[in-house]
Length: 205
Image (tube, rainbow, N blue to C red):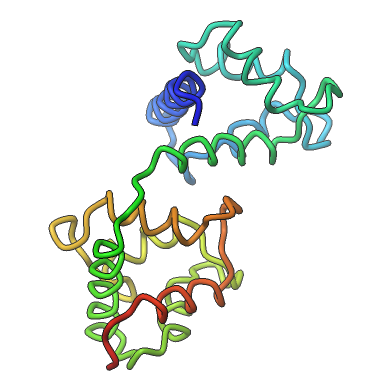
């Protein structure tokens, strides 16, 4: 990824986190979709450069120059329509972030999958049945899995896998997700998750 674009995206994300941290009432997840929805006054799901500038440099007070934002906008508004969808913005920010996450070596992948498999057997008696585990992970019943859902499952108490960072590091969680979502779709279907876990598991319960 472009180092300058990555650095700018990190500053934007830091500003977003700070913005929500300072809200008197803290509800919901920190997300660009949620934040930008406030600027979608006509309900079209589209945003102009002026609206984006008002949102990130005005409301968020992000430490981003007008020039940097224009460079970023050219990537968003590839067809020069003067507008970009909020979905495009969210996905672009996501792809930049995930692009900076670690690339795991084969042994790290196997060790990570093995740790997850052992925890799944401990808490779910899954017997290698990843559909059973996935059903517990898929919090919203969508049939797909997001990074936040995966991370919550790994860290939270049952039905989560209750794995501490000393057992599976954040680096490994991010690297695992980067492999799972190689197409940068933001969510993955159940079949891809199960296939990946079976392919990389060295244990038969």
